[in-house]
Length: 235
Image (tube, rainbow, N blue to C red):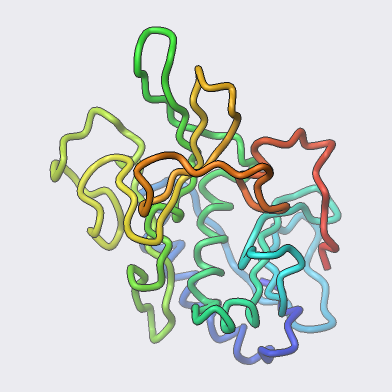
């Protein structure tokens, strides 16, 4: 985790790393089967070669984006968190950091999806985003005084599951596959629609379309060829 923020000190950011490490080791890895060793990189320091980055910055360089995904200068996964933008929006930056970290671990190449058949030739792809459906701060939980993000379990993507038949998210707020909690959303791709990736929200009964997804968002990354990505400064 790299501190590139001026509103948070190195001490404030480094103090969060143990809680995120506990979440990854204790809560995430047994369910999803992927793990990571986290380290802190202070202001003016550089990470080790081959590292994946979570960068804590001040202000979003894309309107409306409180965190998004990019590439390091080695072409490896990078998540950005905007601490001042989060604070101004009344949100906890630690939840965003947890969210971005888990989604990097769940789908680092932003290319996985679950397919639900409608007919033999139509259906819908659901993006493998593990924290979007339950991303609101109210569903987060505390680890040693640090608020971290809730996240879905693999069963959330399994359409055969009956309501209430198993655990669908860590916090046990979700009761069935593909359920979106208030404030939640998920990227979807209708096979027969020709509309590309679009966003389904908990607040709307129909799909919400946008002319272009926010640059840097995982939805924008999914629908844009890698060689056409508009990259930010990874430092």
